[in-house]
Image (tube, rainbow, N blue to C red; front, side, top):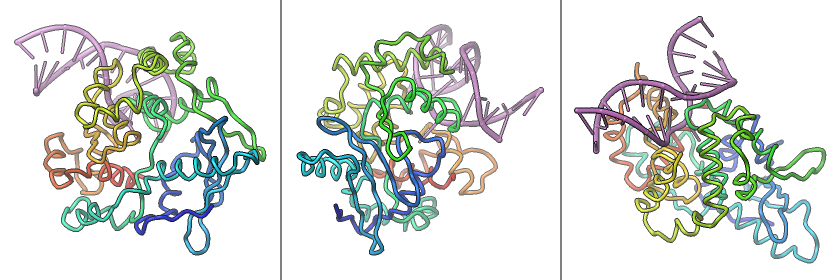
Length: 295
DNA sequence: GGCCAGGTGGCCA
DNA sequence: TGGCCACATGGC
């Protein structure tokens, strides 16, 4: 299917972002084409996303069973719309880029980049927890081991496409099952605990969204063991899509600011708060663009 | 070999 | 509230 994209969208910037780790397991990029196994009824489907010579986006289902194909096509388009955040109007953000000295260093440079999401909240939470206090390279390694151990996959053209593990599966594990993958025992406890809350239905994406405002959702998340302000805001940003979510403690953000401004030290929390006063309502996009400058 | 990493919980004033 | 500190393991 051909998909209408907004004016301020760049598929090549999206692909650049998706290409940032060769160790990524949840999708595959090859020849400027993106492949991903996504949830669908009655079972996951494999989709291919590419851009034609006129810069239109194309989404195709590679393993569709014929009778359901129309429903599946709609599911695929909806998924990509959510994943690539195609419905957000970026014009106000770019307006900020014209007045904010720090944002101006990234808005033109990465024009058309959108905050790539993690639609599955269990995946977003796990990725946040896995990434706490370890370098990103190792985080990708841990995620790969985690998914290969407890997720499901389908092979297509000699490549394996993975679905993220189900909360029910992780909730049934013992910490030893995860420390065996080199997770710390704390991380293992956090992952199993969050999986339990989602498996029993006390924690859901819909439920958090129904709370209505970001502060209430943040409080609900931070009350969970293993989820602090950074992880909560990371999930609010990449899964629940609150544009004002702001993982201000993020060391990557600190380093991005340091390098972009040529500082000799990382900025303090107070300095970042000061610099971000202009970003009100767009903190998540500001963070995503600043992260992008790191690779 | 030492510092750092997309932090968090727990303790203390 | 805000400031320390232990934690735990790999990357570079």
